[in-house]
Amino acid sequence: MTFEGSVPLCLECGLCCNGVIFADVKLQLGDGAARLRSLGLPISTPKSEPRTPGFNQPCAALEGCRCRIYAERPKYCRTFDCLILKSVKAGRLETAAALLIIRTARERADKVRRLLLSLGDTDEQVALAARFQRTARRLEEGEFDEQTADAYGELTLAVHDLNVILNDAFYPGG
Ligand code: SF4
Image 1 (cartoon, helix red, strand yellow):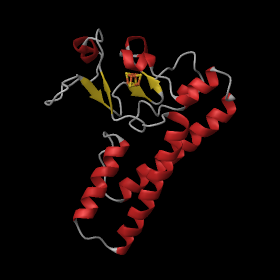
Image 2 (cartoon, protein in one colour):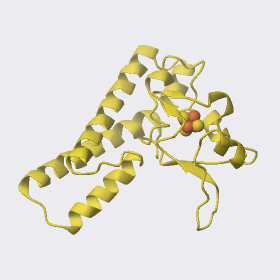
Image 3 (cartoon, helix red, strand yellow):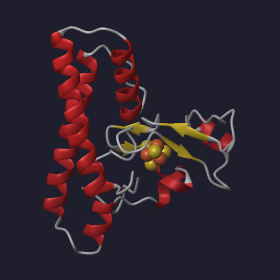
């Protein structure tokens, strides 16, 4: 969520805004829900405690890999740096190597998306992990043929591969 000054890394990535790493962003004191709503973020307040307002990902302000409201973005977005970005900033990782990891992670996320689509999950306005969970629930509750079983097996492996790289390189414990 740190874009400018982190070019080309963040502008090649977008994984912390597009629903791959996070499912939502919680607002912090001073963010101003009304202000962010006026900028196009669909801020909502959960019905159960803790009733912290926030918005879901994929983020409505993300255009390609760029934040449309960069100068006005919420506090969490301002302060979050993924592990790769921290490593590059600290000189522990070359930019070229970081870009390679980002490309691999994006390819793995694309594979998960393709498999979800092939299994009938077409609503892409939901975080990837939630899409996988609802697809798994739907399939496990019903009967499915051999072809669907194969695709589901492939999806499970693809989600595992994605989670490995996200945990190792982007957001440990995420
Ligand atoms: S407001 Fe901007 S930085 Fe924050 S999640 Fe959305 S696109 Fe990313």
